[in-house]
Length: 368
Ligand code: 6MZ
Image (cartoon, rainbow, N blue to C red):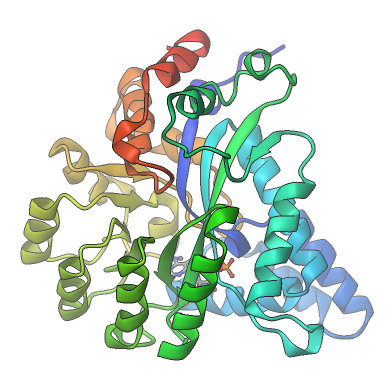
């Protein structure tokens, strides 16, 4: 059997993955063909859009509107969730925080809650790998920590299957109202015992106002949900400062920061979810060699490599590790350390009590 590349065999943590951005092209095309046969979409046009490689940030959000037309019924939401989990597990992601925007689709009898139930159904439908949706005990118990750490070690869990821990973040779309955002937070609270650990604010960054979402985000925080914000995907210093003042547990992207914003972010030590391929493909950052990953990495700022939308940007977590390694000249051992550090920024359990030594053990076996 061919030797697996170290960036694939290495256990990894994925903290910034949007469900509808992580769908296989083959599945999207199949769904588009079905709707095409029913005369609901023009298949050749949709095929062209799905297979197009480079897209501006604006075009990406148009693509999401199309993807949502293809996916927003219960059965399809269940299917894509199942496939996305299988795909991340296949490349040795051992802990995944999957985020998605609960949706209403009146014509399909869907509301935010039934959408999330379809997502959970998808998690339960995975049979090729063992999925831990919510541990009986908290994630921080030594037993769970070490099980997590041995997540990709088939022999150790006695089932002969890989294991992946999955937790959910509910996304608020920037097109939503304060009431709709509040509804999502209340749903997250209701579904806490089902593995929902936090809230994400995402969507087209040129739409919506921070103050619209603030009441719901404050309420979420008061109730103990952890928050991650898409921050600085476009230039908007006032919003960036307001978001950092909110003290989110993590932020995503941080592309369009000026000196004052970098200084504030660094002094607050807020972990950043870095999405290299996404930023390059959407031309938010013009080339990888000038990506802020390098400065944050060199200054020891907490960062985690993520895919954002592995389907839309044709990437994978392994691909992001390989890209960072080759672009910034970081060797395998240091990349492993970067992957391991991500455990400190997960939303499940009490992060600081995680035992990371077993993760080192797993990585050492295969590749270091
Ligand atoms: C901001 C993004 C995003 O929630 O339907 N989303 N928001 N910036 C990005 N960078 C490219 N990529 C994805 O997944 C798709 C939704 O995630 C958000 C958008 O709101 C998009 O509609 P779900 O599963």
